[in-house]
Length: 282
Image 1 (cartoon, one colour):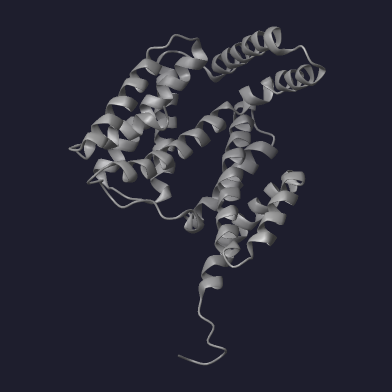
Image 2 (tube, rainbow, N blue to C red; image 1 turned 135 degrees about the vertical axis):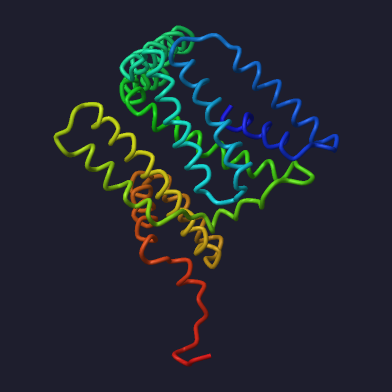
């Protein structure tokens, strides 16, 4: 829904005129309606409300000021999150209620899978690990939804420019050029303050969720920096690095996060693409 909902709205905004546009619009619209009509507990209602608010805020921003900048996806996600908090407060629903509902739904899901697939020792071990992560997933549920929303909006914008005959705005920049405002580095400060300082539990959970979102954003920025530089590296070397990174994934993710954070001040891509004048003025 984080992809198909915004995609359907964007196609409507561009006034479809070709068969391809109408086929895509009909397909994503029908799928979105069917998904919204599904039954479920509080956790499912939380996702549906967030998806609907996200789609509305993103389309409103597109009508107000069309832009291919990544900040628009961040702004739409933040606005939808605040609207979702107001919605929860209006209906008297607290975060503890949502967290408990998510844990219950995940536990029920794991039990259903265990009864069908837990025949081999490897399957049982994997299912036990999944069950042990239930508390972590429920705690970081807002961050996971925010990341899904940001990625979905970016993907919907890219698909939209491939499908629409006369799209609104310009297409997204290539991934090696991925960047966002350097002022977002203050998100690290806010997240660390909420997570490390002796604050009430809701603020600590908010800090943990904010840190997860910022870590993924800066790791993605670091990967974009690496992709821009990797164009000059021979393919056999890149294949070897990709193979090694599979065995050192936690260290690779940490390195990419630090690389993205350092890019805030060093701007590696500008340095690598700047012409070399060998000390001579042009």
